[in-house]
Image (cartoon, rainbow, N blue to C red; front, side, top):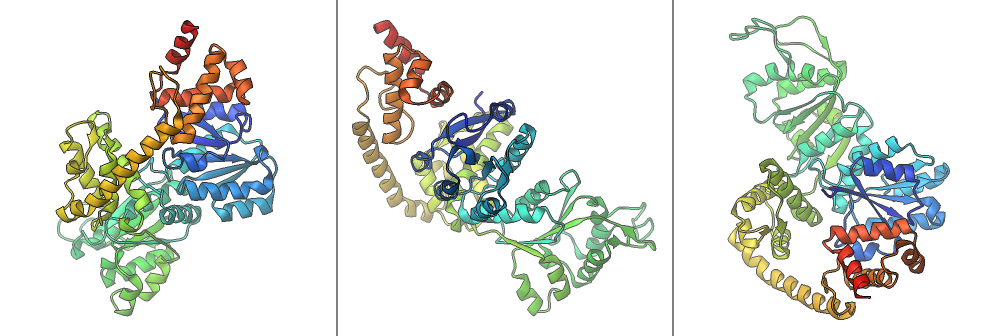
Length: 476
C-alpha cells in the first residue's frame, strides 16, 4: 500500500542524513525531494503533509525567500527548518516568517519523526484542516498556546470546528497523556449543571445514591473543554471563577474542597464581550477565560479548506465501512467551493456522507452532493468555465508535451506541461541507456537515489515505468 503521509525535502537527496530518511520511511512516510523551482508547478497538484528545508543545501540568506515561496504556493503545509548550527537570529526570523519549527543538526531521528507526526495533524490527519492562510495562522497560535497553561477562549460560528481545535490544543500540550473532557453548557439543564460540573456527595439530593466526581475532577491532569460557555448560568459562573482562582472544587453537599489540576479551554459562538456589556456574563470570569483568544473563520471565508475537508470526510467515512474512498470530480469541487455553507463544517460533513451513499461510481459528481437548488444554479457558470479551462489547458499540455510516438502512456504523465516534459526527458534518457540507473542519473545531473525517487513518483501516479524501459530495450 502507498504511504498516506508525505514529507517534502527541498534540496538534493544528500541534504538530509540517510538515518533521518530511513526513520521517516520506517514510520510510514513517503519522502520526496524538490529543488525549490518546482513549487509553483506542483502547488495545485501536490500537497505534502510536512515540508523540510535543510539550510545546509542552500545559501542561508536564501532560506527565508524559499520559506516565503512555501507559504505562498503551499499555504497550510507546516515547514521544518534544519540548520547545521544554532543561529538564534536566524531561528527567530524564520519562525516569525512562518516556519513551524527550527531544528539544529545533528537531529535525533526519533525527534524528527515525532515532530513531523505532530505537525501532520495540522494538515488534517486528526480532522483539523489548515490549508487556508487564516486557519493555518490559527493552528500556529494554538500550538504556541498549547505549550503554556493559559486558559484559551475559542470564538467562531456554530459548526466551524471549535471542539476539533480544542482537541488539537490538548494533543499539542504537555497534558496530552491526561484526559480530555468536553461539556456542552447549553445542552445540560440548569438544575443538573452544577452536579455534573462540580460533582456531588451521597445524599446531596434525591436520587444521589453515591458520591459522583464532577467534570472538573474527571479532567484533572488534562484539559476541560467548556463549549457554549456563554450559556452558563450566572450562579455557575461564580463557582467556575472560584475553581480557576483556587484550583479546587467543592462537591454539591460536600464540606471538603478537592484539589484539581486542569487546563480550561472554552468556546462560544457569541460575542462574549457583548454579553458582558449586557450583564449576562461576568466580566471577571471573561478575563480569566480570555487569556489566549483564538478565532475560527466561517467556512465560506476559508475556501482553501473546503476540498481538503471534503476529501478527509470521504476517506474517514469509507474507511469506517471498509470501502476505498471515491474521488471528487472537478465539477463537484467547484460546486463545494462556490456554495455558501451556512452550516459550516458540520453541514459539509453531512453533505459528504450523503454523497458517499448516493454516488453511482467511484467519482463523486455535483448531483451526488444534493446542494440546495440556488447553489447548484450558482455553480453552473463556474463549472462550465472550469471545464472549458481544463479542456483548453489539456490541449495546451498535449501540444507542449511532444510525447514520444508509440508510448503506451501518451498524455498520462502527472503534472502540468513543463513537469510532463521533465518526466518524458527522464524516461528518454533511461531508454537510451537501456534502463541503467547510474549512467542515466549521471547524464541527468542527479544522484542515483534522486532518480529512484522520481521513478517511484511516476509509478505511484500509475505510469508503468518498467514496461516502458523493458519495451525499449527489447525493441533495440
